[in-house]
Image 1 (cartoon, one colour):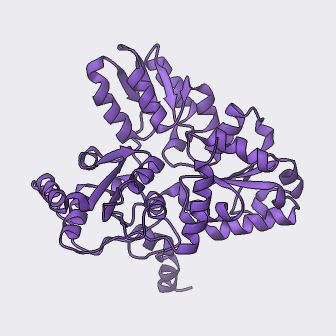
Image 2: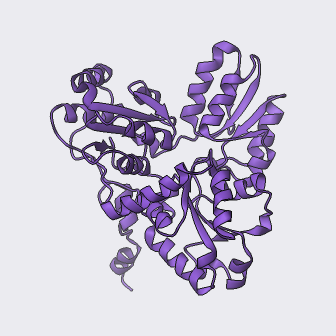
Length: 395
């Protein structure tokens, strides 16, 4: 082999994934997006706040801005409502007079808003590259293949799919088509109770930790009742017997933020801050949830801190933007609120929605330009809505 040939063999070739990460390609079936088709204002533009206010005022009631709890403060200040993903989608559906729904969140959230709002309303995502790594961990093709594996094992007719809200419209549609329901971190226990009334096994998508924690902590199942389906292995890395014996078939997916917290994080903060209360999200690993004092959804975390007594100390295991906002909010009440881990951990895709993207979006809409619209294909939307309606009907 010549030196030139060796250099050629060693040359790094761009992969489709690399191109996606660089914003130079699109995958329409994925949460990953593309760069915005327009020039953003400079991040250092000192007039960004005033420009956002002016554009929002010009749009008036034509625009309704939703801000997820994990968004930056610079974006949250312009939100008409704040909340978790499902609350925001319902808030959007309750504003039929708004022509534009600007969703400051991530892709799957905007999809849910599009499914629940009227056909003449336009749901807009300020940066199409604001996806969700967890949602990306379960594609429609992978889940269809999993269902084939369950069918070959002779158990598909006994399996009820339950999908977390943090999933793509395709996965929600699969769930609706196969008799399942959607859940949030607040109602996962009710959703699993319902599912076990319909069948004797659950396929839980795509977050293994929420599924495992709910099954074991809330329903009283054992860890041995749970198996982990890995879509990157033949038959999910499981035997037919393992699938037949399992009650919970957990998809191998997780939240990149909540998955970072460890048992060491809990032990370290207890040593560092005597008397601290550890409060974590159920997307955390099972050993973290087991070691925590309190476990609950984002809304639960906020409520707990609102009701906490003055002088209490809290270590929070959830996204850092929210933790910092809560720490600032309750500092005057003498509540000490810290991030559970010493490592800074923002949700990187949520943070793609920044003030320049929001200004560009609002000014474009004010000029009559339709940009970054999120539209879910009708058949997919219909089946996804069926799954969402089953959730809304839960007792």
